[in-house]
Length: 163
Image (cartoon, rainbow, N blue to C red; front, side, top):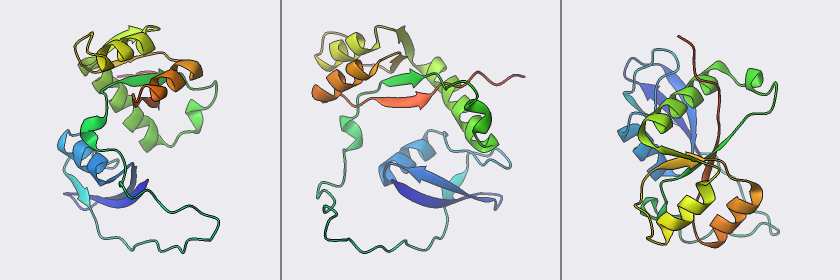
């Protein structure tokens, strides 16, 4: 994970965590990044001090590959219902971002419900058209998809924003 200090075009500064720099770029280009203060999608990386940490002998060295390339990611999501009471514990900015993600996922992807794992496998094997999907998967389903080399993103599925 990479921690970035972000800044909107009006000068508000806030933090963001990303899988890698490619994830930041993709989210920025598609308008998924918004300023929690003013709502603008004109967000860029701000200046930040690097976090320097020495590796202990017991820690493994990071992989040389630098992570999974963006084009290797299958466009699929698995949604997770938050546990009772946990939604209230989220900061307002996080809740707003997760609600915006839900709106975009519901608008741009197909809800395949409990057939999520089966449909992701069909797409991976070329038996169905590749598209964004979302639905439900249990731990066994997620492990089976990982064994096939299918990357799945699990996101908290908050209630839609009212208004």
